[in-house]
Length: 185
Image (cartoon, rainbow, N blue to C red; front, side, top):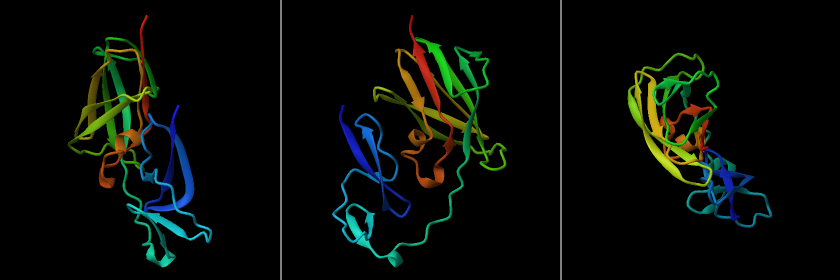
């Protein structure tokens, strides 16, 4: 199986030497490039903004304050309208042909209260074979709802990285993730 080496960058687009090797079917990590850095025998600071460049420490602005990142917390999952009786929502088993409807809360990351926001956003869901579907999620007064019909046996996952991949920094959300195992007899 083919793989790609990604060079992981910090918020200032500076490379600290960290890499991530991933399958060609996995998404690119946020804030990374697959362009190899140039030779750097003097261990100078390298920054990537379209191209690699050597920079002096004083040319790097101080890091921005950490953004406020609300948390998505799944509170209920229904299978074909029936509430699943479980407290751990990190993994769900269902049969092919069933529908899952998710209900979650958008919570303050430190204080835990529901943030009364109204919005909608794309909820990508990725299968292990690299397929991806995008569901529209609705947030009404901090309550998020979305649903999907599972028509094929697969393992589907939604992670924080997948949700935030195409969102601007100010719209990003924390999420523990969920995996759906779609089973057939």
